[in-house]
Image 1 (tube, rainbow, N blue to C red):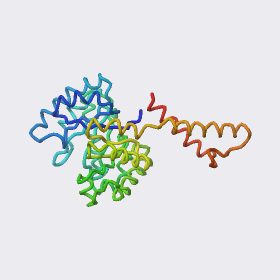
Image 2: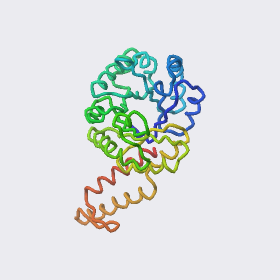
Image 3: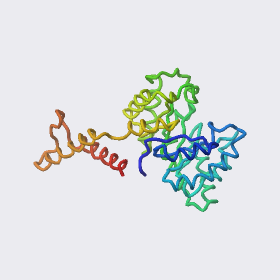
Image 4: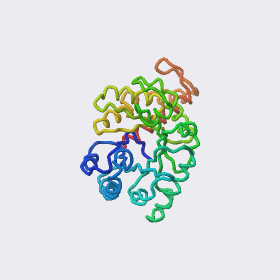
Amino acid sequence: MKPIRSFLFVPGNKESMLDKAAFAGADALILDLEDSVPPPEKAAARELVARKIPELAAAGQRIWVRINRTAHIYDLDDLLAVIQPQTEGIYISKPYGPEDVHMASAMIAEAETRANIPVGTVRLIPLLETARSMQLCFEIAEHPRVIGIVGATAKNADMSRALNFIWTAEGRESDYLKARVVMAARAAGKWPIGGIWQKIKDLDGLAKSSQLDRQLGMAGELALHPMQVETINRSYTPTDDEVAYYQGMIDALDGAMAQGRASVMYDGEHIDIAHVKTAREFIAMAQALKD
């Protein structure tokens, strides 16, 4: 599956925003039925999102939907409405642990069956917003339907409240939990996803935050507003200099191997087969984004 650098949240009750989101340049859209929709409008938002999914997909958008959680389960009416052939995946909020992910997956399977979609087609990304879900992030990431996990560290949001940390722009208070998400996701072969930068107009701050997340190993992040998309995409897109550096590393070792050596000095550093494996993976990722 092609990597996703930017997931853009779009309120599911605002048709004009849904229409504009198609031109925002995000790698994927999250049509939101949860926190961005007032309770009295949730039923209408569900109908609107269900109607818009084929239209947005026809415009080339990758479609994800964040569903609601009821008192005991995730909202089955949401799932039955939005599980369509064009729906790539579902976001779930506030799982307490892997048992909630198993429950959500079973509910998605039921919706897939009713929609005549092969079971397992629709993917799942949990937003880790409880302390217990952070503690069990690897067990959550292991589920076969899960394609990524989110370690969102927005100011005064669910994770901040759950862990009682005091948010700073520098992010020292959340480095551990972000690194934990990266390690769990990578160990399970899934995407670690970061965010969220709430200062919408502070694009310099967003750029710095995104670059730090990428350095930690995040694969992409959540966006709250279309004006954030270009900055996020740029942060997670390999630069021409990076591509040239890694391609040069590959070429240097290929030359050494032709002479019967498995190591060589490159750009002042000792490199060997392990380094070039990293370089090849980087080049493959850059090519996937380009394609």
